[in-house]
Amino acid sequence: MTKDLLGRHRAVMPDWLALYYEEPLEITHGEGRHVWDAEGNRYLDFFGGILTTMTAHALPEVTKAVSEQAGRIIHSSTLYLNRPMVELAERIAQLSGIPDARVFFTTSGTEANDTALLLATTYRRSNTILAMRNSYHGRSFSAVGITGNRGWSPTSLSPLQTLYVHGGVRTRGPYAHLSDGDFIAACVDDLRDILGHTRPPAALIAEPVQGVGGFTSGPDGLYAAFREVLAEQGILWIADEVQTGWGRTGDHFWGWQAHGQNGPPDMLTFAKGIGNGMSIGGVVARADIMNCLDSNSISTFGGTQITMAAGLANLSYLLDHDLQGNARRVGGLLAERLRAVAAEVPHVREVRGRGLMLGVEITRPGTDEADPAAASAVLEAAREGGLLIGKGGGHNTTSLRVAPPLSLTVAEAEEGAAILENALRSV
Figure (cartoon, rainbow, N blue to C red):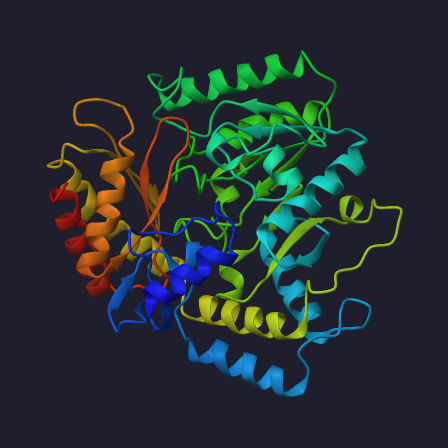
């Protein structure tokens, strides 16, 4: 049955639409932190549909909210008042930390970043954007144009002029040997130098922890230091929280809060986890930025009632059950366990990340060279052991991505770590 579906997939889907595993699997259902495939195999899910199943599979509170909303009305568009949309916007605006915040809902993180770029370039009357090396911001034309990861950027054409800044990867590149303080100072000097060679940019867009790039990040306080420089020219700061938001990093509700010494970002974008699988994205911005457009705009599917019902139920569950605290506690245990294994496995260069957002960088033993074949072998071995994880990486890097639902238990963390240990040792 799966082979038949794979043949049908290949006949109608694009060749560039990637599938994991030598023998791709069809996931048919899930519960809690587990999923099952079409052959009846059960897996512990440590990737959550690319960090999207944030709380749990088939969470009863979300399922009930979606079912009840579907029985009333599923959709009406933003041309009509929408109570669930207003209620979720109120909660997100309050949680964002951005003063006088306005919220615009989209259907994805890509669309959210597109909207933030539109707002920034309109507000600043500039089409120049600062972005981070090794970054990823989506698959649309404009988002691809600011993505600093060659593996996910199929064209050099762009409506924007993009300048790439150092700092997204702490342990590689020309500043890797420096202390954290000197690293930040060097990145700030690089930013000042770039600004001396170009017209004033509209904004800096940055992931507090780079997702597709392999869960890399700069030292805490990096973007606070950048913000001082940006503020001198009125350049906006956009925090791409599509993967880091909602408490996944454990220490903070938003990734930007690790860099909040000089205040919140001017805009933040979100998506993925808030819908727990339903298609929700959005932008939070100060009112003067959000209201800068001088033409009409709507969203047909952004903020539709059924997704807002899911988002409200999911956010309530997350807050009521302190899943941010759980991510900090259980993620800390999982990271400690994986670092102990890494010390004995020559293929592992580094275990990094925070909370339940952990990267395991795979290299050829004794070198800093990427080893894609070894990473793929670990991915396959983990699946054979009953564990689903992800992959990532940027310039000459390969990383495994570990990002379970935030309700992960200690027992499940231990189970997953044991499976991943066996997979790493098998290479």
